[in-house]
Amino acid sequence: MTGFYLPGEILGFDGIGTEKHGCNVMAMETSTVCEIPFERIEELSLQIPVLQRHFFQLMSQQIEADHQMMLTLSKKNAEGRVATLLISLSRRFGRRNLSPNSLRLPMSRMDIGNFLGLTIETVSRTFSRLQKEGLIKVDGREIHINDHEQLRSICHAAK
Image (cartoon, rainbow, N blue to C red; front, side):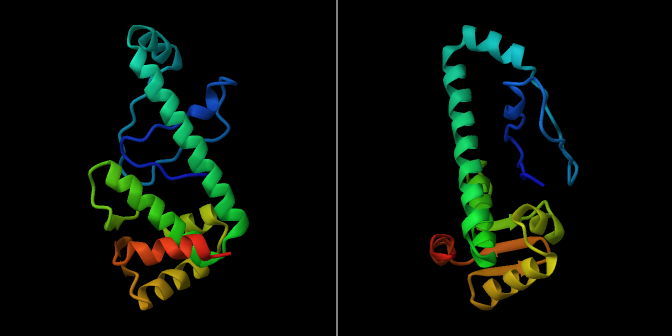
């Protein structure tokens, strides 16, 4: 498990250099995918120069997100990892004009554990602990973030 993508997000940048992708994609719920061959993006970028800049920005954001996730996995404890994931999802939901406070997780606790390098039990205990502290409210896959600032402070402090 190397990532979770939300509607409107672009994946597949890893295949540009080698013309091969290093992983497979699996939809975790009903999804729609729009395939755009890279050759077509190149053509359109010549016709619409601002498009090329936009794709460079998207690639830069993906590199930064991957860098942050590597730091999270290598340096943070379970609470920091889960908090970082929730804050990341909140930001991404907000960019898509969805509520940054009420998140419906598209993945199971097991998937979250695989992604964050944690057991399913640790993920569940961490959600329970964050809920007990009043930072989030958990109802199955529905997560309501009550305190973004405190959750962010866990992201920065958890080592």
